[in-house]
View 1: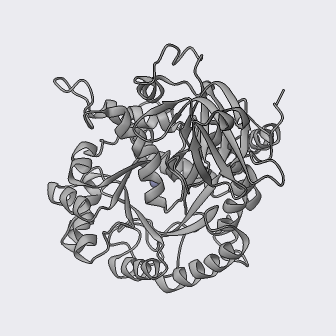
View 2: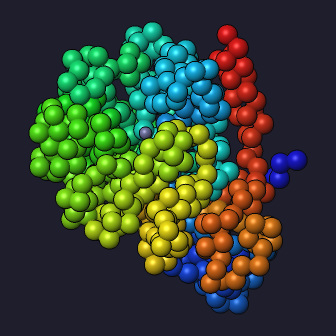
Amino acid sequence: MPAAVVESGVPHGAREGGWLPDCVYTGEKFELGVAFFADALGRITRFSREPADLTSARRLAGQAVLPGLVNTHSHSFQRVLRGRTEQRGRGEPGAGREAQAAVEHRVVARLSGEEVFDVARMAFLEMLLAGVTCVGEFHYLHHQPDGTPWPDANFLSREIIRAAHDVGIRIALLKVAQLRAGFRAEAGSAPARSRTAGAEQFVRELEALRLVVEKEFPADEAWLGAAPDSLAAVPLEAFKAIATYARAQRMRLHTHGATTADESAACLAEFGRTPIALLAEHGLVDKRFTVVDAIHVTDDEVKLLGAARAAVCVCPLSELSAGLAVAPAEKLLAAGAGLALGSDTNTQIDLLAEARLLEYRLRAPGRTRAAIAPDAATAVFHAATVTGARSLGSTGGALEVGRPADFFTVNLADPSIAGADAGSLLANIVFALERRAIRDVWVGARQRLANGRHVSHGPIVGRFVDLQKRLWEA
Ligand SMILES: [Zn+2]
């Protein structure tokens, strides 16, 4: 039985509404016996220990409150591939990324506009179930299945945003440009559904989309970022043109980079520099810049990213599932770069699992605990919240006065974290919480999940099941 979902935490006509959990994470630590309040716009107005406030706040007994997680890098449609690329043919030594890409290509070629919407809703629902309240959707499906543009070039971008709105999650739509199939490939060789004719056209479309999104959604519910897919897909001059537009609009700039050693070598061969060094040389690496993966970065590139206060988004589950190495996250953090986390291929959707895997992948004999920072749980939770929000340009990421009341609650009696005290609770949650323990999720003081259920849970999952049947039976 789905529990009744309260539309807003702030009673109709009231100035503010409040919550009183057993404890609340206010950054660095959990505080006990504190109520917090939000106004009718969904912004946190104050924290209080006043007896009258403790009485008037809605009691969340047996629960802890944490800031909503920020999933900085997702390709929602790849949710259809889950569990479908884990086999290889007899005698095939290893499937590799090419085999994965071939399956993706076959399936992607068939998704209708309505299906792109349905799979996005499924992925976004699963994110809410995992405590995620804001997603950066790195969106590169732009055209009809046969590659013909839709009458509105931004149709699928708008469908993705509509899916996020429908489910109730904040979204930074990172519109992706792909001009070619790889380094030194000719212009126009990118896959048919994602191909962009050129930087100028891309910027025109992004500007048209910006005007629509600004008109239809509050600024912190849905907004845009520019995403030249990678230097392999967007040659330097086009990359610069897109970055110039993004900077003028104060948009975030996201790109995949330094994912494999081969890619860095190909970039060096074409442009005389490895990816981050090249982008930095042209002034594109700054605090609004995020590079996704950053696995094969040189020590100099680590310094460049740190000095620029740029962000690096790592996606440990997807990277590990693709047989990739791990980014030198501890060096990047020490250099001053921001570290964010993403679910990328959505092979699983569990941002806390991403956080714990990142720390574990950095461990080695002689470095068996807290490899990323002296306090590993705090460092990776910061990545999953504060830095992710900064990378996407989101107003969320922390429970502070003036920020939106975006949060999730966990059941303190859940067997996976039972017995934790205030000092060990965050490490219990980061390293052991099972998703089942996530109870309620609120976005802008509006309840999206009650007792682990979304009000549209049944229809969203049902439509996705039907879609998978159609997609894989044919
Ligand atoms: Zn990606």
